[in-house]
Amino acid sequence: MARPSTQQQRRREVVDAALAAAAEHGLRNLSLTDVAHQAGVTRGALLYYYEDLDAILVEAHAAGMRRVGSERAALVAQAGSPAAQLAVAVSAGLPDGPDDALMRLLYEFDVLAGKSPLHDELVQTLYREQLELFRGILAAGVDSGDFALTGPIDDIAMNFVALEDAYGLHIVAGGSISVDDARRAIALFARQAGAPFPDPLG
Image 1 (cartoon, helix red, strand yellow):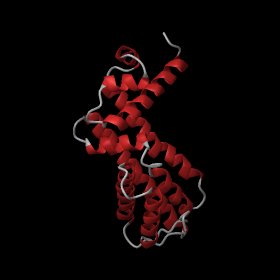
Image 2 (spheres, rainbow, N blue to C red):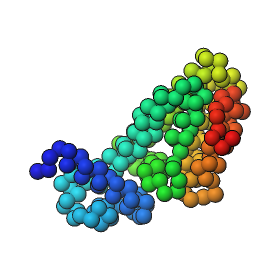
Image 3 (cartoon, rainbow, N blue to C red):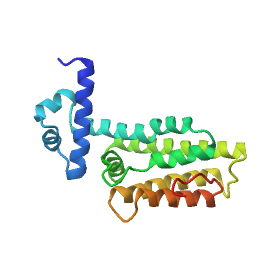
């Protein structure tokens, strides 16, 4: 039996293979065989580490949640002012580009909501984490006097999440919206909402 460190590495490799296979075949059409081919192993080898395809996808989903949730929150906590925190939150919440397989899979899980109670709960948990992150930053900005919000804090936080999700979906879909376009547009909304933050593009 593989040692724990080796098992963890193999499990990460399987998740990476699932992300790559999902990007090629789409989540709806993805099979365990597709993941095995991508990983260069047999189906039996995959089943040594995971019970089935859904177990692999749950771990991939959880990895995406950590990136947009706890890992992003840690980056935000390292920023100084609420304005800087908001800039970090926006940048870290968007995909890296059209080829960002992990973020693409997250959006596919959103589209397929209702098919799996477990994935539904993960989707809702991630939404709550996104909302609380923006609420916290906005509240801190109001308390410090950096922000003068033009509307209710809950509504503004909801709009940040909605813009992040909508622009992110367009980015991974390879549409006409780039990462820079999305950052600039969200920065404009932030200024209009009374929560300006430094836009790296000016």
